[in-house]
Each structure stands twice: as structure tokens, then as C-alpha cells.
Length: 241
Image 1 (cartoon, rainbow, N blue to C red):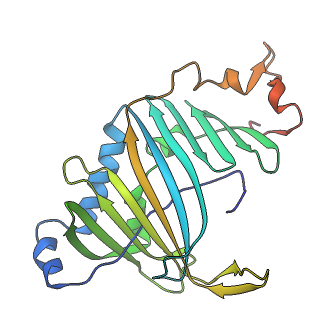
Image 2 (cartoon, rainbow, N blue to C red; image 1 turned 135 degrees about the vertical axis):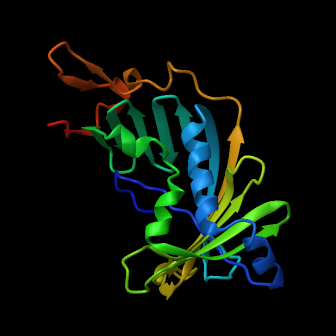
């Protein structure tokens, strides 16, 4: 996993069959993505627990890496945790921490860009709808990159969508270029990869006290930031100016 401070989560997947055309007449990829974005924009509070699994090969079942995370929204508060990285955004301020590299960054953040951290409607700029189908009670929407020469991380994206509220329950992303995978003997081999993300909404949201900058730092009256004691060994970067 990339341990950089800035993390953005993307989503995607693929299906073929005679039933695709019949179902796509009722719902298009474009209308689906807009409904998904609307759901996450209009829902005031949610917590989504996520399980990430990286697979070697586009169709392989060998898990090479796995980790967990969560995404929380409570009105104007957003918290994203993925493996060793976390971000807390409140109004127009954001604290991002990379626990692996022990770096903490405090910066201004455009709240409009955080209106929905699951901004699947943005896929429409780079992806075309390939198919829409019903699979095990879910809507499966497959997207494919518009231009293979575009610099996008995924060649294909698959979303599994709850038809009752248009929330996303699973994503599968197929990488556009080969990745290095380590073998049991320590050697590396290049192959295409597939990232699967299981997404489950839960009711036990964290409290506002936990979702607070006070858990990360103290700020003096003149704006000086002092990290909490548990982060005393972290490098602090102030990007507000």
C-alpha cells in the first residue's frame, strides 16, 4: 500500500451476459453513479467499515495483502482510516496522519470537495459504463476506462450497489498496469492486480468527542499547534499558509 498522506479511494468491476442489455434499459451507469453520490451527500451520518484485499492476477484468488479501515461522516465531520493512514476533516480544516512514516499534516481543506468522500460521479469523466446487471440481489455496475492512454490507476471498475438506497456494498478495481508481487522465495514477479473492498454500514458511530481535533493536537490562542503526547515523535507539517 502507498503510505502517502493523501489518500483517495476509487471504486470499480465487470459482467457479461444476455441479461445485461435488458437491465441496462431500466438503469444506466450514469444514472446509477449519480444516485450513489446523492445517497452519500444527503445522508447526514454513517460509518462504513471496509475490508481491503489485494489479489495477484485479474482472476486469481491468491490474497497478497489485506487490511481494514473505516469511513465516518457526521454532518460536517469526516474521518477516513485505511491501514496506517487516517484523515479527520472538520469544516475547512484537516489533520492527516501517516503512522508508518510518523508524519502529521494540518491543512486547509475545501469542504465542497469533502461533501462526499465516495464521489463515484467523478468516474464519469474517465470511465464509460460497460454493463449494468442484477447479481445476488445487488446491482452490479461495470465501468471501463475511456482511453487506455489516460493516466488512471484502474482499467476497469466494478460496483455492487444496494438497490434499496444506492449505497455501495463492494468495489473491485482492476489495475491498469502490472504491479510487483513478492514470491515465497523472496523474488518479485510482475502481474496485474485486483483490489476488492467490502463495505458494511454499521450503527455504532464514534462520538463527537472522539471525532475531534483535540485528540490530535492542542491549539493556542495565537494559532500555534502542539501535537498530543502520543504523537510527540511525529514530524509535524503545518500547510495552512
